[in-house]
Image 1 (cartoon, one colour):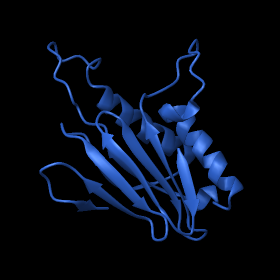
Image 2 (cartoon, rainbow, N blue to C red):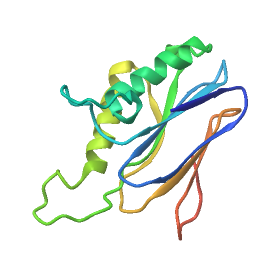
Image 3 (cartoon, rainbow, N blue to C red):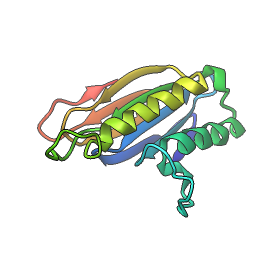
Length: 150
C-alpha cells in the first residue's frame, strides 16, 4: 500500500489475479493504492502484512489515509485486475483466485460505503495500473491492448 497527497502517481505492475484498489478523496486530493493478493486473511495465518488481503488491506488503507486528511464519506474507489490467469480443469473456483479477489474487494468496499466509480476487472490478461493523485485518473496498460483511462 502506498499513498500520496495532492500530487504524485502510484503504480502497481503486472496485476494478474491480484486486484489494484485505488481510493481517492477528491476534496483533500489524498489518494492511495493497495495491491490485493488474496480475498481474506485466514484466522490462523502468521502473515503480518494486512495490506495483501482484501478485507484487512482496504480497511487499513482507509484508516491510514484518514490520518492524512481523507474523509471516508468522500472516498471513491477504482479497481483493476482479478484476471483468471490459469485454466484449471474441473471448473471449480479454487483456480480462479482473481474472481474471488474481485468479489471480496467489492464486498469490503460496499461494507465500508465506498462506491466503485470505475473498474477494469476479470478476463485473462495482466494489467499495470497507474493512478494520478492530483486528479484521480487511473490508466491501465496491458501488453498488446490499447491503454484504458478510467
